[in-house]
Structures are given as structure tokens and as C-alpha cells.
Image (tube, rainbow, N blue to C red):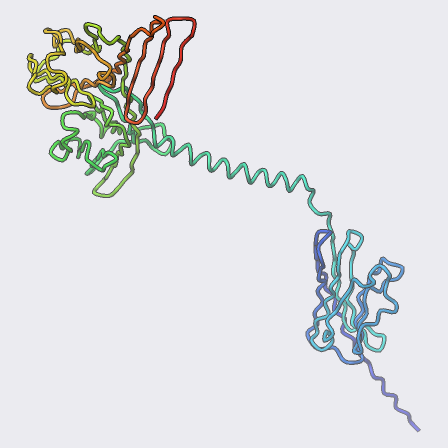
Length: 424
């Protein structure tokens, strides 16, 4: 009798993968991934373990639920798996509040009838969180970068918006505008159809130059014969403008716009501040006369017109070597005088006779040549009232009335001292 023996060999497929997960200590949780391609049978058990521990079981799960009887005490209430993990094949483990001592190799094993069906290893590394000073340093560096960027922008705006200051009546001032390369050092030579327009705050054309030639017919009447640009401006890239015969009303922003082949190229804005000149003169009421000083360039020639004026109107008018009393305000008729050779000497001072308190105020002299404003000057006149009190103390009262304020200055010729009152 022959007996045949049949041997059944069962082949087990065991897969092993190495994954790495890094987190900082203090995070809420970390996920240790473990995926199998097919669902796990109802007879299988999933075991997460650490081989470096005496009690290696980190978490165990089967069809009926978690099996935490043999779980290491270190992981109590800190692990969690999906309830449908065996059906979906997602056997990942969530570890709450990971600490540095949790760093190790974790093994996800699927067992059936005591045999390993699959094995996946996950290397967990828990690092110390960045030091506080590093965070502060990073914040400071970011702040410095922001401040540097803002500072650079402000510097560029300041550089592109230069401020020029001159006094009223100055002969000329230069408004700078130079085209340079990206380095900001070398000048750029301009070629092609180049148009340069200087405009003021009211968008009036101050000066126009196209292809190296001035266009006075496009210039606003206010600036006629008062502007000048360099002859070789296209070669040198120096588009600066010279403005002549400055007056206070020239104060404002001036923009240099450059166009090439009818396309806008660049622009620069310059702020001009023209400060009025003021001289204070004091005189007593009852004096024979007072002089309002104004000395300027000698040898004035051409059609020159001088006008001294204040809030009342024209105080004195002089044109082409002769006074013009018919243009003078009635209040000052027969009370003013200017020197005969004033055009030769440049002494444009005005003599005001028999000054009274009501003469106190601002006096401005405007000089025009060939119909264009040339220069000017403002003088403040204080006229004092002198009288004696019942006690024979000499008292001096000075009054100055302006647009919206007044000042009273009292000097007592005794030990009582000096008092000053201001109001509005």
C-alpha cells in the first residue's frame, strides 16, 4: 500500500519600507504613516511597536477595536488609529504631544495567525524647538530689511525731489536735472527725437527744448526771457534749468519731463523756495522823514519801472528817469522822494516824509525791466508815538498792524520798566 503525502507550502509576503518623519517638540500631534494596498482580513491584527523598549507595544488594533492591554505606559492616552483602518488599509498612527524621547524607529506590523503579513518602518525624529533668541533675531533681521527698503525708497524720493532756496530778488537759480546711467555716476548721451519740458505746479510750461533747440513760442508768458538751458544738453545729459530774476511767487515745484521718440522716458521734480527779504525800520512820529532802504545792482538800463507799494496802494512810482505822481496813492502825494541818479547808483531807497502811526506796515519795492519783473525787497516800518504823561514820564508807543495781528510796545522813561502786549 502506497501512501502519498501531499505537502502544502504556504508562501508569506513580507514588505518592509523605511519612512522618515521630523517634528519639533511641542506640536499637538504627529502622524506615523502606514498604508497597505488591500483591506486587511477580519482575522488580522495591526501592531505598532518600538523594539528599543522593554515593553515594545505602542498600539495594537484588531477588528473588534483597540487592544491596549499590553501597551507601554509611556503611550497611554497618546495614540489613536482610525476605527475603519482594517477596511480601508490606512493603518497610520497618530501620536499626541510628541517629545524628544519619542524619537525612534516605529514598526507597523500586520499579523494573521501569528505570522507577519507586512511590515513598515517609520523613523520619527523629534527635535528641540528653535530658541527664542533665534526667533527674535529673525524678526529683527526682517525689520531691518523692511527699514532698509523704506529708507532706500525715501532716499530716492529725496534725491529725486531736491529743494533749492534763494532770496527774493536773486539774480538766478539753477534747478538741477541730469540724466545718468544706472550706476548714477556717468552721464547719458541723448540721441533721437528728444523733447524736454519744464513745468511748474500749475502745469504751465516754464521752458521747452526739442532736439537741442529752445521753443519760446510754447513758453508761458510769466517765464518769457527768464529761463535758460545749456547748449550741449543732449551730449552731456545735463537738462538743468536756470531761472532768472527770482520773486516770492516763483516758490513751488518744478518738474523736468523727458520724452524720447514721443515716448515718456523719465522725470524729476525740484522744489524751489524763494524767501522774501525784510528790513525793519523804526522812527518817531513827528520826525521830518524816514528812509526805507533798498540797494541793488548799479547801472540799471533799459525800460526800468520801480513801484513802492503797501496795503493802501502805490506809495511811489518811478519809470524811465521820472517820478509818476499821477499813479501815486493820495495818502502819499507830496510825501515821498527818490534819488535822481538811482539807475546809475542802484540806490532805490525811498524817503517818506512826516511819518505817522498809520504809516506803520510793510512796504515792498518791485523792479521791472522791459515789462518783466527783475527783483524786489520788503521793508517793515515801525512808527512810534511819543507823549508825556501827567507824571512827566516819557512814554513811547509803537504799533504794527499786519493782516491778522497787532503788536503794541510801550517804553516808560522811568523805573517802571518795559511792557509789551500782542493780540489778534
